[in-house]
Image 1: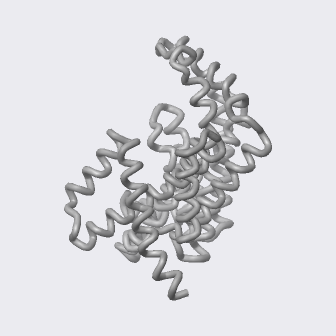
Image 2: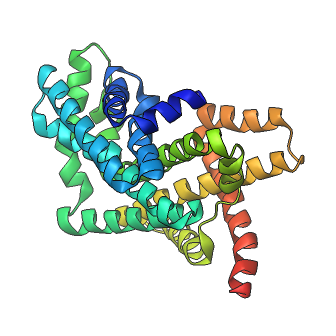
Length: 299
């Protein structure tokens, strides 16, 4: 996105409302990769103009998305819930970033918030398999009606998906919020301080406490069969993957990693996601531990 476009969005709240709503519609028409785009716009306005401006943009876009849902034959509350999901977390993180000027703190808060959300979901809604199984079966039937052969019952996927959905939803929420914040920060920095976002991103870490918690959660997930532990482990793996990507970018900036290798990392992350998530999360854990210990000792 050009400097002129990002500056225009930040200076024109009305335009930002419509752009946010437009971006919010993209995933509904099959552009799943665009889920993080709508949250980036109110986050940018928050970073540049303050939280009040971001809330106004998010509120206006939420109204437009709710109306769009109504036109598409879906209840208005569905549009409002969708808007809250894609716009709320990036907006809150942008307000924190504006105050703290620390992407690392934002990542730590996002992970802590995700962990609290997982705990609350399990505590208040109970067994995730019992809660989600009817929805997953309905989804499978709808996909079959649309000509997509998928026998979830035969493959045993209903129970697997239902059992893990809390963790996937939470991890996806955190990752989308952070991606929206990254894009908003890049938009903000590009016109005035090019390269600042890259420098901030390359220093990302989750700290010793969350690093230890992630190791405990992943180890417990491998040794036990409890949905809550598995969901927490997924959340921490997602956060460590971001830290691993930041470490890869830092090596590239230092000239120790070729650009082609960095592109290969992203390509493999798309083509062989389970393997690359494990590799990047492990790299992120080691990098986080090595950089967090000196910081803790100096503190």
